[in-house]
Every structure is written in C-alpha cells, then in structure tokens.
Length: 228
Image 1 (cartoon, rainbow, N blue to C red):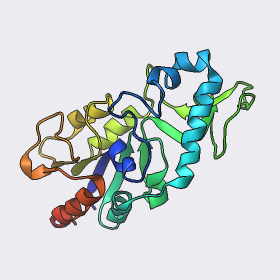
Image 2 (image 1 turned 90 degrees about the vertical axis):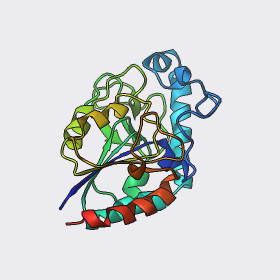
Image 3 (image 1 turned 30 degrees about the vertical axis):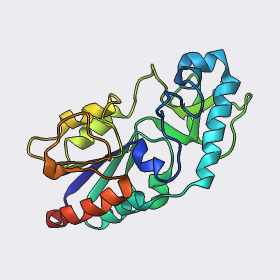
C-alpha cells in the first residue's frame, strides 16, 4: 500500500468554523500573539493565557469535521495515510484518521509547566491551581512561539517515506513545518490545495486552487491511478 503523507494547516479547520491562527488584522481571536502564545506571556499573566485556551477548547464543542477531514480519513482504505498537522484541534481524530502528528500541540491536552514529558488528556477548562503529578501548574499542551517543536523530527522522518505528499490549507510560511517539503524524496508528486497562490512555485498539474473540501474532492479523483 502506498504512503500518503499530508501536511494540514489552518485552512482545513477554518471551513469547520475554527478561528484561524492569525487573520488579516494580525490578531488571534482579538489578542496579540505576544499576549497569549509565548512563554513570556504565560509567566506574565497565566490567567489570561488559560482563559484564552479555555475559550478555544470550548469552541471545539461547537464545530465538526468537514468534507476535507472526512475524505482524508476515507483515503486510509486505499493508502497508508499519515497526517502532519499544524492545527491544535481534534477534527482529524473525530473524522476518523488514525495516524496524526500534531506539530504545535493539542488543545485537549495539558502538561506540566516544568516537565514537558508529563502530558495528560484535558477536556474542560483549565484553572490556576490545577497541578501536574510533579506538583507544578498545568499549562496548555501547545507549542508557543520561541519554543522547540518536539514532533518535527518525527514529521521529517515520515515525510521521507512518502510516495505522495499532499499539502492542504497552509500558506507554507510557518516554519519549521514549511520546511518539510525539503524532505520529500526527489520525484515524489507533491500536491497543494489552497485558494491562495502558494509562497513557492508549484507545477500547474499539482496545484489545486480551491478550498480544502472542494480541493480534496478533486485530489481524490487525481490519485485514483496511484492506488495499489
């Protein structure tokens, strides 16, 4: 079975109603990134950061996977699919995808503020005073600006195994995720689904200038000949 490796970004979740990482005015849910998505922000105002991510976690209860998420899950019937996502929501999981690498963390997990290896599932709001097993405050299991991306090496390794590499809903401007393209083996077809012109040049036959759901329907037809 051929290996399909998929890199997904904010564009695929936006179609489900999830607020995108940064909109046109440079704000993230009416907050500057520096206020809620850096280690400095955490130590300056933990309550503000917790409130921000609590609101985002609650929003997940109001959204559902869209056709793009569902088609990716369905493709597991014909391909060995691994999804590398920049998104922190759980829409890929809820659509039924089995192999997912979250580069930037997960909203429905919490971790110790002192030991990043202490991670636990977390469904509700997180409060000051919620402690990890090491006695330290729990924080969102999110990779903030200025922090290392622990899963990037695993993502690089998976990318080198791809028989087909697909990019959905990302501007290819956020690193290190955008650099994964450099780890695709020469000669491997690389498809891009995004309504906006890509930051890098793409062969016309591999660029699908559509939103995630409509683009995935086109992609599904394009790769029928790859099945084996």
